Image (cartoon, rainbow, N blue to C red):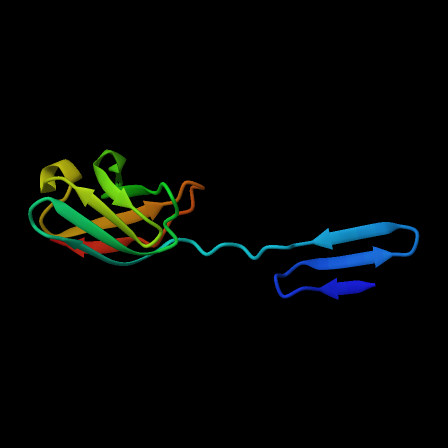
Length: 111
């Protein structure tokens, strides 16, 4: 007998040979940054989805976890002056890495 569940789980049972399962959970989507803003003073706001409980923030290739003021699955607030956050005039890259080491898209922030 074969059963396919909406979750992706496939179950197969054979007479006298046992039962087998394949799948069961769809892969999680990677985190996604939809917007990043810097207020010009001391606050960088990252909005999106799938950040998880304890994400890492990478600005211009440098980990800035020490400056995370708050984080949720949909937003991260990073506080610090431009120099401390590694921001420069012009284009800056921002990326979020989940606790499972899954990387988001790279967002380009113009300051």
